[in-house]
Amino acid sequence: MFINWKSRELNLKIVYYGPALSGKTTNLQFIHDRTSPQVRSELVSLKTREDRTIFFDFLQLELGQIKGLKPKFHLYTVPGQVLYEATRKLVLQGADGVVFVVDSQMNRLPDNIQSFKALHRQLIELGVNPAKMPIVIQFNKRDLPGVAPVPVLHRLFAPNGTPTFESVATEGVGVFETLKASINSVVAYAQKQL
Image (cartoon, rainbow, N blue to C red):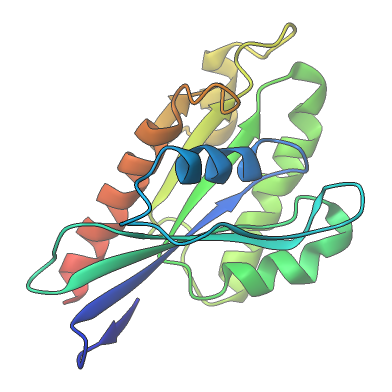
């Protein structure tokens, strides 16, 4: 959280985290495409030649007011590839909230678990208690064959009642519901600190 008192802006950072090809960038693309240009920035993506996120995606949204301050939500994605662990940690630094995007396919469970553990480890290394960080879980790709049952995903990624949403990011199903829940939890957390 960063407050620019001169312009009365409250800057909040939400990071979409998850394994490679889980749908993090697809979420931001859908949000960008369906949000009025008056309240959003351009979508900035740094990609490899294979169209994979190499550093991050970034989108800024301006919504409402909090205690007389105009909030600006900075949405980032991290590269999912294990090769970019240091980059993921760098992008995660200063996050006010996290959306963990799970690829629901059964054969991707090991990648999801590895990424989820990396998220928790990196938060701890950054001096953040994962239990206090506003985290929302998105079970993406629910339209594909061979997906894990939702109760299994709950047990693995949200055993303590973390908010979860089923999604098909390519079609926008669950995308805004996930974003709204993340924004609400980040705002509630920020209000306690103001």
